[in-house]
Image (tube, rainbow, N blue to C red):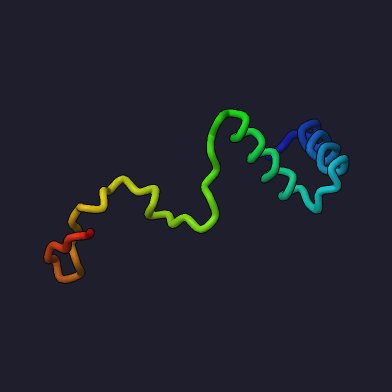
Length: 71
C-alpha cells in the first residue's frame, strides 16, 4: 500500500517518463533500486533450478521411494 504522497510521487515520475502504467513504473523503480544496490538481475531464459541449493550430484527419491541420482 502506498500513501497519498508516495502515489503522487510515483505518478509524477511515471508521467514524466511517459510510462504506460503504475505497474510498469514500480517494476522500473525496483530494477533501478536493485541495480543501484549492486544486485544483478536474473538473465532471461535462466531456469529456477539454476538457483537451487541442491548440487547437481545429489540424489532424490522417486515416487516409489527409491533413490535417483542426478548428473
